[in-house]
Length: 93
Image (cartoon, rainbow, N blue to C red):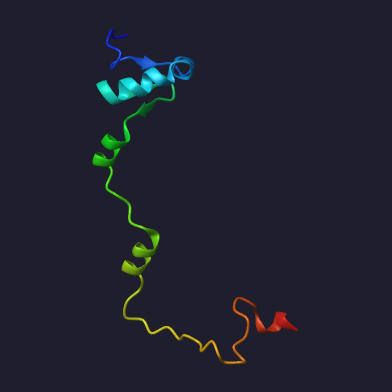
C-alpha cells in the first residue's frame, strides 16, 4: 500500500477502531477509502454537496411534475352520495 494516509485503504476493522482519525483525514486530506472487497469512500459533506445537485422538496417536485392538460373529475366533498374510494360497489354490500 501507499505510505500516505490519504491514499491508504482502511480495512473495516481499522475504520471501526480509528473512526475519529479517518473523519479528520477526510476533512484535511480528502476522501478516505474503507474496505477492499466491498469498497466505500468517506467524504466530507461540503465536498459531497458540491458534487451532488441539491434535491428538491417532494411537494415542489410533485407540483412541478403533475400532469398538465388533463381534466380529472374532482368530486364535491359536500356531496352525500360520494361513495368510498378504492372500494368496488359489489364489495360494499
